[in-house]
Image 1: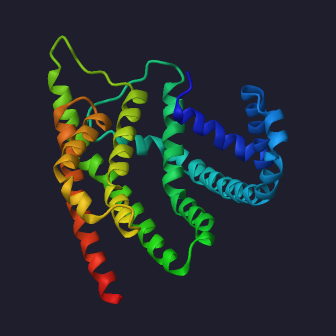
Image 2 (image 1 turned 135 degrees about the horizontal axis):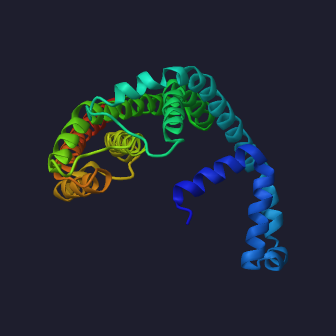
Amino acid sequence: MLGFNEIMVVLVLALVVLGPERVIDMIRSLRRETEGLKGEILREGGMEDQGEEEPGFVYHLEELRRRLIISVVSIVPFAAAAFPFAPKIIQFFRHPYGGNLIFIAPTEAFVVNIKVALATGVACAFPVIAFQMWRFIAPGLYPREKKVFLTLFVASIALFAGGMVFAYFGILPLAFKFLLQFSAPWFQPMLTAGKYFSFIFKLMIAFGLAFQLPIVIFFLVAADLVSLETFSSYRRAIWVVSFVVGAVLTPPDVLSQVMMSLPLILLFEASLLVSRLYIKARKATK
């Protein structure tokens, strides 16, 4: 069964390969066939209204497609350059575990090398990808909004990187120490390379996403979508939610959950402080 991630990958690939016009045609045809709205749309004149808005929408999709193609192409040379160094990169990421990794399928070692090279390529090409994202979003912003958004964008990248570094150096060694203590002379761990890298990459990405909390709160407060008082009044509830998020995003051990929840709480309190300072500065300039 296809999940949300798989559906999003399929949609992005369809947009890149087929182009926006064909994607729109396919979506429209599918909607007509499944919902039986073709006659109703024609009778109510929906096609005329849609035709007025469609050129701008197609232009934005075409621009998004161009930015996605540049982003994907930029990954290829970095991944190709990283592939010969994949064994050394694997050796580096093996440190939180400390033991040897195994593979149980003939193709597993080769696939792991490719995945590591691709992940390295994405990391190295991230400045290019971030720049393409900025070029796509910037034309729709006012000058003041561009300044605020660019600051948040840079802070978001720094927080994401900080979350991944924190997970690698702070969480993973503790997590493996805790999880592997349940081994016994007759119950020895033999971690496969594929499962191991899937585990550590998911955990690092989860921490990177969790560290976006200050950006989200600051944006909501700065845009006057949620007041600072509202966040303050729900402080205890947000603390509880932080522990729930830690339980969902981390492996099923108490230590990893607490080690994610505590930084979330600290980031939440820091974001309230920054938002409060921003509001004071904004009032002072009025």
